Image 1 (cartoon, rainbow, N blue to C red):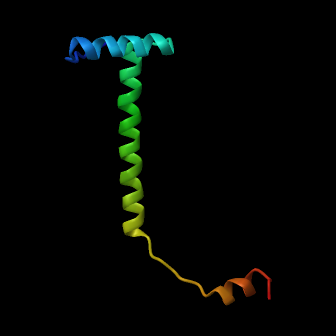
Image 2 (image 1 turned 180 degrees about the horizontal axis):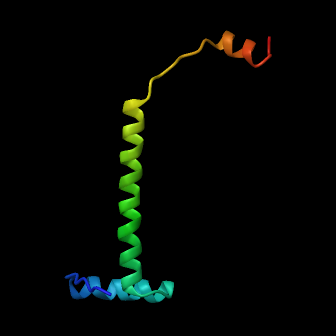
Length: 72
């Protein structure tokens, strides 16, 4: 398994250790989860942008929708 070093202040380290302890997890797991969560969020945004740019919009008249759904 590879090791990645992260430089933080003593105060940041204390906060990270306290947070990890509170959640019953290691700092490594919390940092790894946070990284991949952000990566997934950014991927989701990119996919949504690509969808929006490729999407063609079709507008329907309300009266036509009511007819099609059998409300008229």
